[in-house]
Length: 288
Image 1 (cartoon, rainbow, N blue to C red):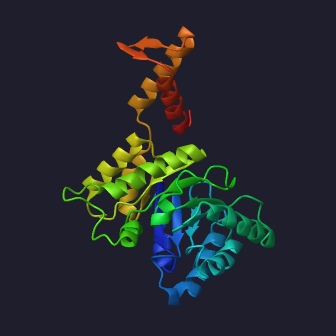
Image 2: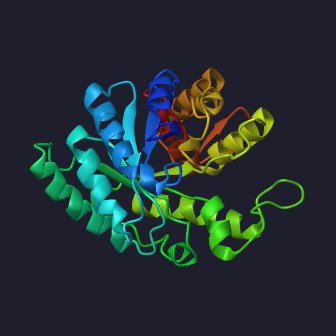
Image 3: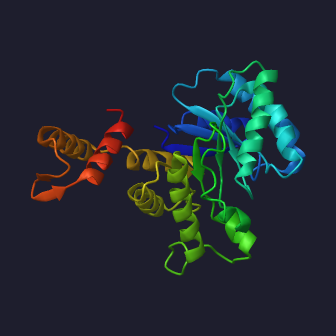
């Protein structure tokens, strides 16, 4: 289960090496916002070498955030890093769901050129970073079998909208960004892929990251992106079903199996099929 996704600057050997011990389920080696354009060429080389040095990804997947597909930097990013065989590509700032189809075709060619297994490289768009992209959230279904998830971004969307902040005075997300979060979740479910929650930018506020992670889990997100290693344990705890939750889910499944009906009574509660599906989903996330 890919719960925690940690951003790591692609131009820092030290940070990439340190991130490997973070406990994150996925490292996102970044070639976009955290790397200056003049440093992109050496960063691509560092990322490629790091990918090649870690062929065993059983315990930690390695993804790469490339530059937007609409820029000439994206193909150069792919050419630079695909020989290392990343597990997936994080696609920033798409303005159309068709971009994941186009990226899939590029990956077909790069996999063939580098002797990689066809279809191995997955795709996840950061689907809410432009105003136009916001209107595409329901259009990702069936675009490519490479699609592994949808995530969203509040920082770039705020910049695109000309906003001074994406937060209300009480610290909660302002309405446009709550809308982005909700539509990302629904778009992911509609496409049959995982919804991954966005970063909590204030990495020093452990209480805030804990609250937002727990809120996202309750909403239906399956993981969350981190920008600092200290956030990873908080995310992993929140997205790992507890023993209490597992025990309850098992009792629900057992009650339905015994009853053989569409509704059952359990501990004074009347449960129906949505409760069974929730219990089955929780057990699946726990690997049970």
